[in-house]
Length: 159
Image 1 (spheres, helix red, strand yellow):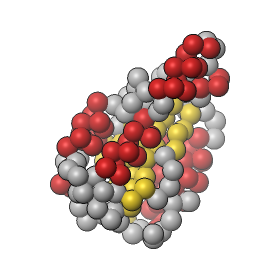
Image 2 (cartoon, rainbow, N blue to C red):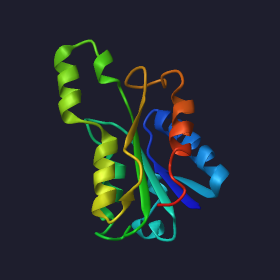
Image 3 (tube, helix red, strand yellow):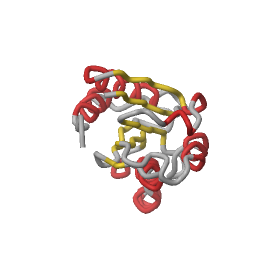
Image 4 (cartoon, rainbow, N blue to C red):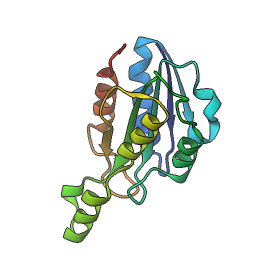
């Protein structure tokens, strides 16, 4: 299995999650991990699996991830297996009720990434996943790197 993991990271947390995912997937084939700025849409061809991740910023992926996904033409990923993840605050642990409401209604980056990957023809093979940070700048909550590796291990090898 030939895999590409694409990520963006603001405070380093999403990069750590991407690395844990890449390491886990590496046991099942070749894996390339690239920061979003190193990727052009035409580079996505030739992979069996493309995994894209971003921190959640204003209920969305970073501008760099959103920009890359906008440049991926419809059906570019036709038949390709895709997966999406993000890093985020845990809504039910936020202090202010109005902020919990905003987060729950605004959503997270992973679903938006997954929707864009599907729009480009990708076959979403696992539900979008979120990994939790303690605060806006992190660090990651305890056990999230292990959970990321486990999530990656759950990605079907074919299908």
